[in-house]
Image 1: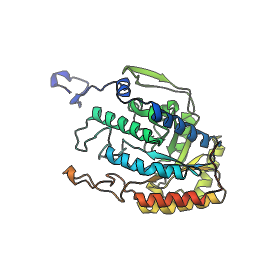
Image 2: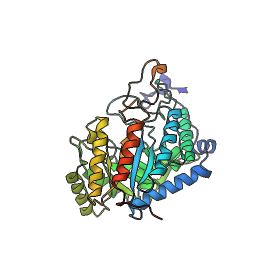
Image 3: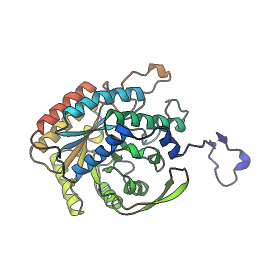
Image 4: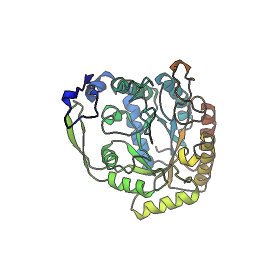
Length: 360
């Protein structure tokens, strides 16, 4: 690390203590290549998500997985549980594994695997990027498409080629920078309503991301460059609740009407967690049941659901002694257990059987 000296500081870098050089995106991609089965998984995942958004495929997208990934070994274990279930329910659901590495914070807290892979405040981002990419390659080799949340303009250059679906979160949907990024992302992108529950910001984000933009990022070679985009035609709303839940039929109808007024395809995904569960992870199951009733009643605007799920139920704080971390338990938001996930998704798929069908 280069440490900044006081003699280096006159009018800039006054609050910077030092910096570490990162390998270029191309170097990391060469170390952990996207090829073979992993490449086919990503291509298939991207295409199938877009087919659902284009109504060529009437299945429901299910973004399922831990609130955040903190242990790559446990993430692979979870993926190996999820893959057989994804195959079993493939006629009704397109299951995408939630693989979130970066955590947006209202104030402070653990920033996620990319920024602090050792959970100790050392912030070895160079190692976090490698750990994250290797894990994504491993999950893709298992045959599961991946969904992530985009939080900055740099890390997607290292990871986005492995992504089948992308979210822009409630705290960043209003950000012009994230809207520009979304306009150039190759996967479909879901924009969440903001933390107050306002859906207009997500609709405005879709309108913006569908247009062409320019933004600054880094090339595969590591050079800073201006990236120019043509706009992303595969963006949709995610209802995640706010001050009040917004998964109910009335809220979904209002959202669909607002999308129609804006001239945007009425594609709505519902996050069963966060504001919709009132921060109670067990209520995700009630939200999912309500969604299944709406779909059974011939709702055509709901195209997907999100579930926060882990091997074990609940969550835990990160202890000072990292050996005390309980295996398979979230260190961020509380999740439902694998057993609950498996039962809930089977019930959900069964409830919409005959209403949906996989494209040929």
